[in-house]
Length: 502
Image: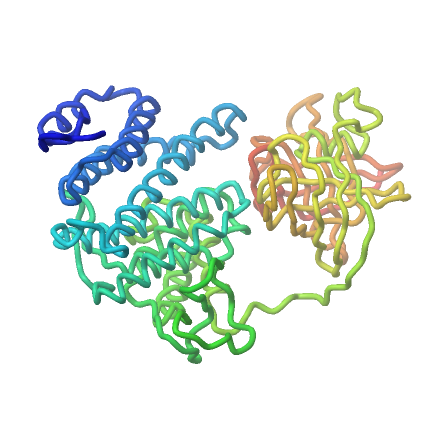
């Protein structure tokens, strides 16, 4: 807009007092609506002409601060929903990812004003360190929420993320300490935010459930001050990236190409602390007062801590079995009901398994295989999903668990499957002590016959309750030993098997 007589920009938030009034009037209980409006105001203020750089940053910071409690509330709802409806999950994810995307873009453009030497930008240099920290945090959160859906990851974000951090080094602000949000304890620096972002991406979040990835992020934030960063490889550095490239962090498997943008990083001295924490929780059976673990269940905490200890080690995790390249198709049924139906049980009328999918196996090993999903039906694919798999041309089914998901597009993905059994058996079990009660399940026999596992619906397993099934003249009794694995719609329990002759 052409301003003949100067003055403030023609924008509802040009006056900080009016901006505060607008923010204070946001609906307190409708977090979706509030976040939608805040996302709009970020875009509007960031793009409006006429703002002086310092005044624009002041309003953008106010908007971002107003968004934080809403973001925490919606993220909590997202993680608390064990198996949300597709509509609910999409709505929550879209609101959260949408805000961080807009915030990252808006703050990055503000940084670019400094990079380009725009008129008046240096008058706001007192706010530059805080701007750099918030920009890096918003971009890292955008990447995190992409990982919550296992991708696809837009690599162009890494170009911006790297560029913002590189500028903090140029301005000698990489270690400038700021309070990120008023009333929030602790300080941050651009270097800490950079390390948190690259370490999260390098920590194989494609192998974690959303709640596990969120806990991993909290632990990374706690340990970040002791992470190491250098412009050249060193024995303690497991990963590298290049500030001049649009690339995600990568594990150092060979000497990375040298250049001014090369940055190598690793967990530093935190590995010893991780292992100590693992031992303490395993021995006590309880989560310690560690702030990052925040009341997590011991099973969840141990799983995430062991995962981080494994992937942060300078020595890459060794494969348990050699992989062999293959190309073949699999029919795939998923979820407890789908698996039971494929094995001949349940109440489904889908005799031809019209709900099954066709995947392409790329490699196999003794413990599992990797596959490509060319056309995903629905939005069910996630780490921990139970799957039944039938090789093309065969009539036998395998049982497996999804351990890794990396989406390449809306309907394409690469997955890693752990094989649970090559001969799963559907059975109806009598429940000891309950006349006439029977429960269906999938029996996974062990190789040595000493212990069996049974896949059941949640809530059926009871520590003191045997399951029984008759085969011919023999009564097989399964004595409960504990839960080996849990998913949203199944439990895998361990049993000791005894046989009674009739």
